[in-house]
Length: 264
Image (cartoon, rainbow, N blue to C red):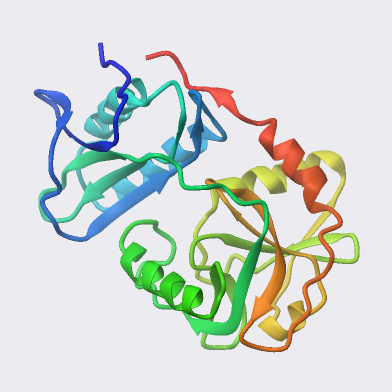
């Protein structure tokens, strides 16, 4: 039986030996997925599993049974105490399945966003993993503009998402997001938010908007680490953030979705 880990590090997996401490062999990530783990509790863990398994299948390897066995062993190895930000990976070249155990960075409840509008650098926008390095470069440029994040823009000028988060905003009482025909990553936390909206009678609509059309609106960036974060400042162009009227209540609801990891 896999024992929970207690230290940061990379664990590589094989059918013969399960998870063992290892070193990355280099090469591009074909698939990656990550989430906040707090004292053995996670939001939407089944959804992360589904997205990771599906993404591995899109790459054509390894066999489904191996991905399922890896996920089971990985779940048993996850720490049950402390705040962590583990990342599961499928590496190119070696097609190695592995989990990178990392302590969670400091969590924030709001953020400043670079409003210069960054051209989308991703080559595989609907799969998390291959473009993490390119997106990290975008976030570093945003940090140089005194911002925490940057909004990615389609060639048409429409907003897509942020470098590390899905993009949602409010127009009157309607919760809005870009239409699915655009190159968007299927966010686990966004799916949870949309389900909650449907259950509570909140209208949701997919709308095409330029960055300037978000001026004055309540805008959220949403991901599995920080949850829902309202934009409290824009940098790089004259835009005014809308008041975060709805964010506190929705953040409390989302925090209540943390559930214990399944038994190994």
